[in-house]
Image (cartoon, rainbow, N blue to C red; front, side):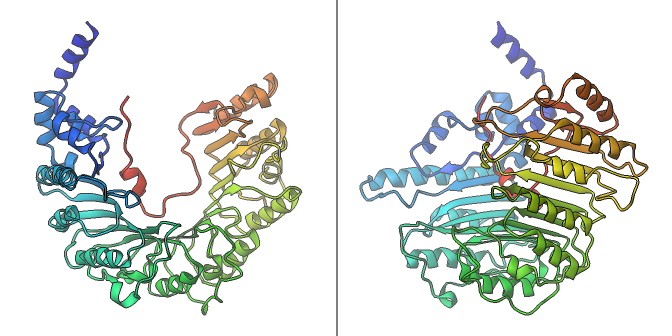
Length: 507
């Protein structure tokens, strides 16, 4: 009875509404394994929902799905795991698997008609015919995410980069490009002649967003001068010199993300930064994990408005020096993964107060403790100093007088300092605070967090609820009103590439 009613309801839904519902599905990767043959036979792959699944539900859904090109425009290809020894596989069986994947890929390209394509390729370790198939429609690529895997064969890696270079001059619509080159830690280091293996991608007229990760920096050349958003994740200290060269050619950058993502200390090996330069157009700067702050701190960034850092990537004094040298006015400051050493809380908040005092134009402040900062190290009232310094007083100047959004994450706090801050912000003649988000610390297990009643007594709760009515959005512990999005670590590349290609599980 229930199934019959459900079928009746879906059959009466307008086609345009079904198209919108279908558009919310996510792409399913074409993995070069025996699993992909099930898609051709049954129309679905367990654990993922996609347009392939939807097109095999019924005749009407199939007709709607096939006649909607945008549903087929996101294409993901996962190549064979290079860590797997395929020598024992039946060559005929492997060729059959690739043949099925090629059939599906060509069918998806055909059904996408003439719409712009978003391509993601993973684990590409050697030239492959599926890449050649994708290349036949490179004139329609608008987003490309390429994951290259070095498995110890420099000749194969060089051929992959050479093939990638064929994109130059063929991708007139490509505006976002991400390239990652990673290697097996148990393999020998990547040793390629930079000139022989150079992947020159200079002729990409629409490219404005680029992300380079891993050992790729010395092997790829892009039209740096036309980029407006750039993300660089360095894997080795010696590539920092190349990063300096790249930044010197970026004349239109609006957003920049830098991180050094290999365990160990960069400082003792980091080369001396080059001469001070100017990033005249940069408005947003992000530092992740161990950063290359020595490269950026000497630079002048007069238009810098937003700074997003992980704690320890750059010290507050270095932030202050950078801001002072640039004579910029920050409107957004985000500091995440805060994890001070025991006994350093007082010094940490002293440095933060000095930093906030330099930036009276702040409209958004994010302060997030590290999730893995152990509960034993977190004491009750950890964030009370922050709430006290943000409390408005009649005497001027107050810190962050025009603050519109405050986001504090994974913290312990007492009710009274928090309420005093909130009361002063709401009842001040400068009243600007519109959004407030405070999440509690994790207690032992990741699914246990404090509630409002754990921190507030009845009187304090009533006072908080009365004050919260003046805000557009509030989320404090388990109490919510309106909508407040999570702050911290913004995406350097507009649109957030990973979100574009996330795979939604079946309910």
